[in-house]
Image 1 (tube, helix red, strand yellow):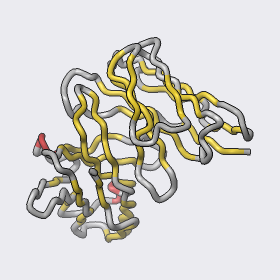
Image 2: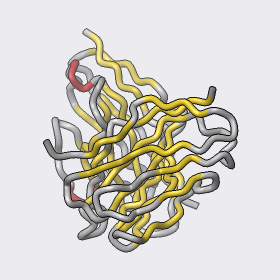
Image 3: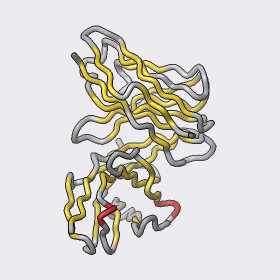
Image 4: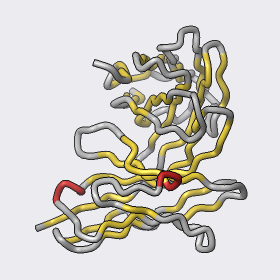
Length: 111
Length: 114
């Protein structure tokens, strides 16, 4: 069965410090992974997906199949990065995106 | 203003009562989803629909039912068979054109049992 693990419920860092939000997965197929973010009083929204190999708001995430990880990183944290972050794994079913979510990590960036 | 609208924002259910959560989208998306979120847990998929008049069970479908009579609407009914209905419910949609599209989420409905 597929599973997504985010070991940290809360990650507190100082502004300007590097950030790494951990995500590990278990899946027998070829994984498609995503990071979703929820800022205060906003809706859950896509931050980035591994197939795009993009950098959004300074965040990057590399899929490491050997370690079954998809950690989210940013070299210098900003106050506006404070939010709830969810790692998600997609199980393809036709054109529907069935996602398995992790439990989420709250990132708190302090001055 | 395009997007996904969930109503009501808060809903209370009495024992033995069925309640229906509304989800409407004007994004012209084919695929729609219902997720349940409990404190300290991730989102879990209840039901999803890839096209009108078709829907599939997700991981925790027991005690829930859905319909997809119109493209823009995907209501979720929490039946009396759902013994632990208190949770935050999120509706989402995606274009349904290709695999692994991003999901667009509504603002959620908090359901509580009286």
